[in-house]
Image (spheres, one colour):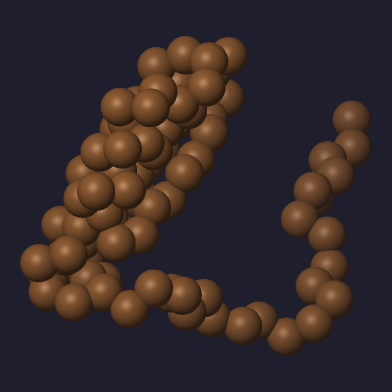
Length: 92
């Protein structure tokens, strides 16, 4: 048996991620899970990491619950009304 490393080679230098949203204390970041298995758990870890880096903002998680369905108008309205930025993710 031969093990193949799936990581591949970098084609350029590493560039640190910089958030595109400027977040002030008290603002909220939405985390939107699409309902695939693992999406909520993954975003819980993302939320913990965000809170470590940006302790001045709050984080709230939404779960669409069904990967086959569209996001509900209610969820989209609440997210757009209460969040300054959103991270959407899927799991498997």
